[in-house]
Length: 210
Image (cartoon, rainbow, N blue to C red; front, top):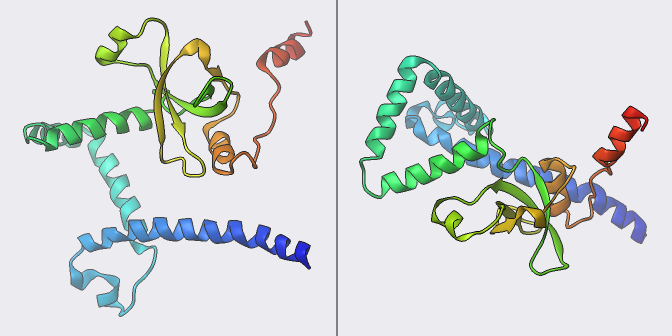
């Protein structure tokens, strides 16, 4: 009896959590319908709500915004808009900070959150997984002697909160796993282990036969 109950939990719990997360995401994105005039909203046109319609609208807005700003005219308008925001007190500091973070995270040429590391935290001899976010900058760099890297140490099981640390590069170990594998490992509290990859040195030896 007990094993059947546990088997049922193993089947239903992941499904329930997946549906809950999807419902949360869709519900949040559906808020874009509030941008439309009330008479154009589904509840006014059809008499009932259409879950997911706002999600489609949000994705369409993001796509069209990217398409528009890729041409010369859109790029010029974007620069004028950013110049205007930079002249508004308080808004300029918030906007510029968020833009720098988003440019770093989503840029295809950047390395932020593209490498998983093994670091000692919160004390020597205790290891955890972190993500490389860059290198120290500003006046911080003037006070750190040596080759330092900036890392983000996520908490378990909620990786959206965590700690920002600056460590010597020699004290970190680059892992041969992608970000998705590392996140699954963190969220599952070590239960879902990523596949074991052969060390790069062994792969090179196998290919060369030396």
